[in-house]
Image 1 (cartoon, rainbow, N blue to C red):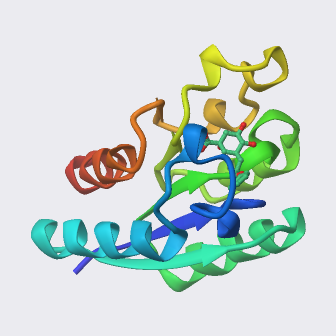
Image 2 (tube, protein in one colour):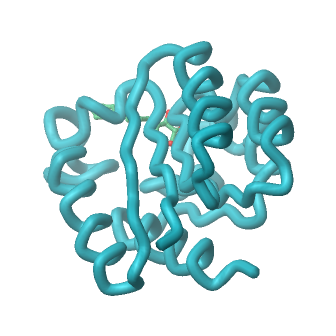
Length: 145
Ligand code: CA2
């Protein structure tokens, strides 16, 4: 059975606690429950990791790749818009596929959120679809050659 890693970046541990008009009222735990149910339906395994630290996310990408995961669903939070290092980390584990997800539509918010450095290392980016975007990302990975 394939295992996919779901990586959450900075502040996503605060989901459901602030800015419900942008991110909704459900928590990260609620999101992980939804993803687990979709994984069961698809017949794949999922592992989760959240960190507020760029280096910790990079170390985990390397470790998960060495451990044999089949791909990544990533929401690097604000590091999306700043981190060449996370882009390079995904490239460093090629050809493992990654799909980037954003709960909000990053193209319709502040100018500084419009560009993603990390999407260039991903096979797809899903933005603005809320939590269902993560389920779509998992489906994309499960269907990926
Ligand atoms: O829309 C997304 O999923 C984002 O990746 C969320 C990030 C943001 O920096 C990106 O531009 C878009 C923010 C993570 C969550 O931040 C929270 C802020 C307040 C309350 C709860 C979460």
